Length: 168
Image (cartoon, rainbow, N blue to C red; front, side, top):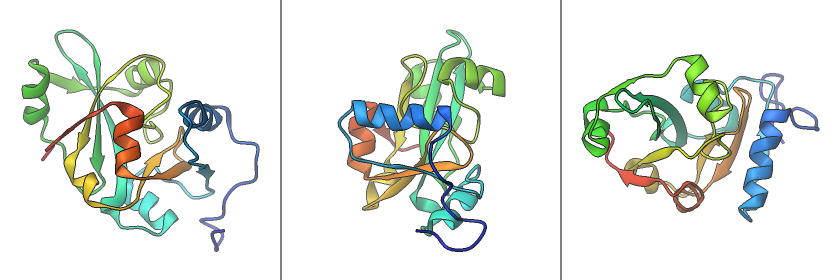
């Protein structure tokens, strides 16, 4: 499907964390297929290059830690947008802190750079960047820094139950 050594789709079976995302999609009755690539999709720019879309079409997952309750907060942002943390704090009524790699894995079950919008270890409050809704198709991480899947913005909202907000 993809050409060039850096972007070839890796042969199946999927790695365990990526298979977990594929299983979550199927459990939701969605037909989306996860793709594992040889090239990294850790950053929005890398993901966009790997799948041939604009950086803005990458739905990047950023996990924060609510500092008073220690709850994870997931912001799914357009790849080119920077999250205005004060804006998210106003929605959750408490300060946000950085989530380190151990915290992200503990609460989502995934590594930074591969956190998908679904399939987490626990229920997570999710905010979705309203800018993602301007695209016909978007791409999200699928459980590893080498895996993505294509979806529509309405699928993202439906599958996550996330709240669509302005994040900038």
